[in-house]
Image (tube, rainbow, N blue to C red; front, top):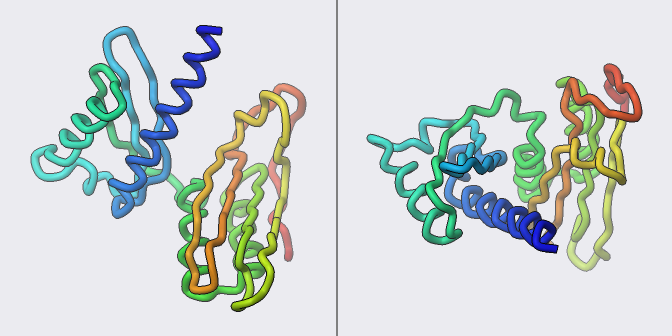
Amino acid sequence: MVVERKFIDDAMIKNSVTKYLERQLSKAGFSRVEIQKTPMLTRITAYVTNPGRVIGRGGATIDSLTETIKKRYKIENPQISVAEVRNPKLEPRLVGRYIANSLERGANARALLHITLRDIISNGALGAEIIAAGKLAAKGARARSIKVRHGYIPMAGDVVKLVDEAEVVAYPKYGAIGIRVRIVQPGTKFPDREVKNVEVPKH
């Protein structure tokens, strides 16, 4: 029970730190965070599209983030490092934010999701799923959802942990839209099956 509680606590801390860094590093193109605990320190790696914005002049920005995380989330000896995102089109949070921005500008939801799905697969993903739910039509229309999926996306079991996932919210003028993006990265190895290159969907 103690071990289970610790896993829950660790997950809650990671979720809280992720949300905090997402707010603070939005202009740097924040994508995700990895947290690794060792006996001496807690190593926090933030993945962004623009690392220079995170470090700040003389390291002032990253020092401020480190101090806030230490006090707010009771993390002993945190050390933040910054890594540059290699391919934004394979990062669920960045893909979700792109979709959200496009919907807020009035893009057609169904066409947008299909085009984005093709982009993800064409960049080597073994599988991808995008779900948008909420006010997807004009004022007065019912809330509904659109789901697009291609390739292999496990839905249950421990293998689900091998899927990268993020959720963001768009706020077009007719109401909020929740967006969930799940991506299986190129080269992912599954214990129960072999997934090779996936053809790009035609539609």
